[in-house]
Image (tube, rainbow, N blue to C red):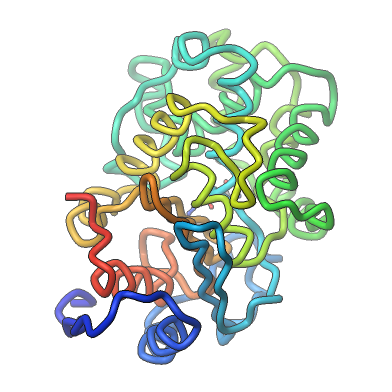
Length: 317
Ligand code: DON
């Protein structure tokens, strides 16, 4: 039903300006009323439903943002692409995917998936695979989380980024399904560490960012892991292809297939209301609006991305 309401936008010029973004934001703001702020983690439910932000890092690395650009929200599942990057950098792709698939998702993010059948998570974008991925980042205690946090700070060039303690504790308190997955994988020997590895997953989910930070992350993976300001410390074309392919097939959970049909861009959502989008070889998009659809994706965020991708014909297909 949401799709039927989308009017086509007429392209009059091809310049990405603040005004273009503001128009798209204004036209799609109302969609937020069709969603629901996540409250399965009690602390998340406190997020304002009215805040909305839209940010783009263009092909030149220039950042253009409109709306509530200072509004911070938790990354949630968007942290999974950063953890995947760190785990692969450290261990190599073969080791990371030894006990995990590259499958697309047709199940909700917290579904046990193949865990009880093949013993292996479907992919690193669903919780089971993400928890396994985090457990593969080397180091004691909080080390794995600190590496993920450091990478987020690097990509965004934003040293002030940190995690929200209240959200973290709320996740830890209520994350029994995640705990269940962790122990199934520990039981089968996929995970050898202790529960602090699960805490690292909860902590990375609780990292707070803005839409602008997400646009920079999108740009980074769109451009061979080169930062928006041109810094090439982590340049790795192959790694960026791996991350973007996972975003494409599983980044929007069980909605990924339909999303690929509508928008055709590698994207990753989080239940905090953020979505980060990579336009391969070109730019990054970051959106925020807390109310979610039934799959856990930001309703107004999705609609803004859709309009923007149509307006500038960004669909890779
Ligand atoms: O594992 C969880 O329940 C959350 N902390 C993260 C899930 C998430 O963002 C999935 N969503 N779209």
